[in-house]
Image (cartoon, rainbow, N blue to C red; front, side, top):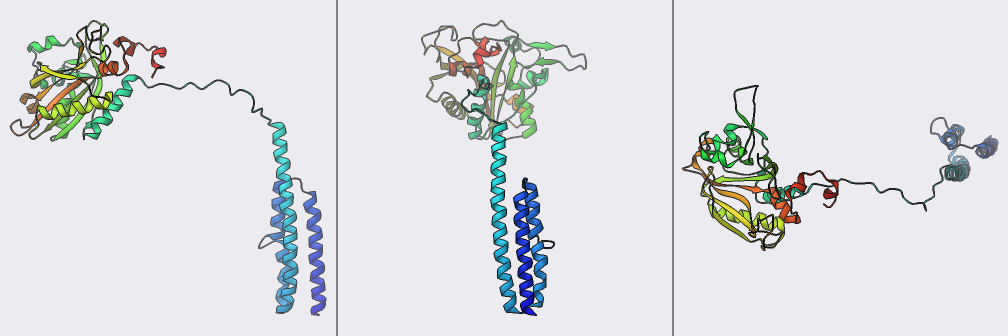
Length: 354
């Protein structure tokens, strides 16, 4: 009985092999080939597995014999399927190459045009990184500002003669009684920052400022400044000079000649003006430095006690320094730009240089 069963199983396996060979030869599609593979070798409904379920009636020796034949059959059919799959994929690739042919020797076409960062943006970002490395935070403030934060909180009351030093754009505020201006300096954030963050504080404020004045090679109605502020215990002019030397060396990548001279700013006491040697003419004299070889780049000094009080800070316990850097002038020095009006011209030929 066992001998007849062995012969029967061998015949069934041989018929299965012959059937598989014929079906594989007829297939022209990869999806159908995958279906055929599942049809023969699937765990639950695969033809080979269904056929071998009858082996449980046999002894161990008979199972080994039939199992060995079945494994050989499976390997043979699998090889036929793999070879067929490789042939079909080759045919598919050749068809794509014939229908989607691309001549790689042709020119690539037009070069994609990329935008350019404005030189103001380049220098501003570099300065932000330099001051961040010194522990300063970067803040922002409103360009349309109240008269209080732009002037009064900075020790410049309505009748103060310093108001005549800044040609201001006043805004007709029909929506309220508060007097509004286009900020004349980024110093408008000094008191706001102290009120919001308290002390000690290290902070810079880059941004646009506006002055109602005639334009020339070194002046415009809109330009960029960077305000700096450091308040804590025992802060002195020495701290200010040290910070500014690090910042200027970082932005110009070399030692820069500077000089301090007395200057008047209502929000600092004592006040100074810092000049740097003109890098356009190397100190010889040009239209940018007005033929003197030096260019004013910032006003600075120790913060006036009245400003500290406006920010909610006790001037008997704390002191600090503030400075306002002419960012636009630093840009002109860095890149050798002789006329400030290029920076706001919108001329793409100018921007493509950066």
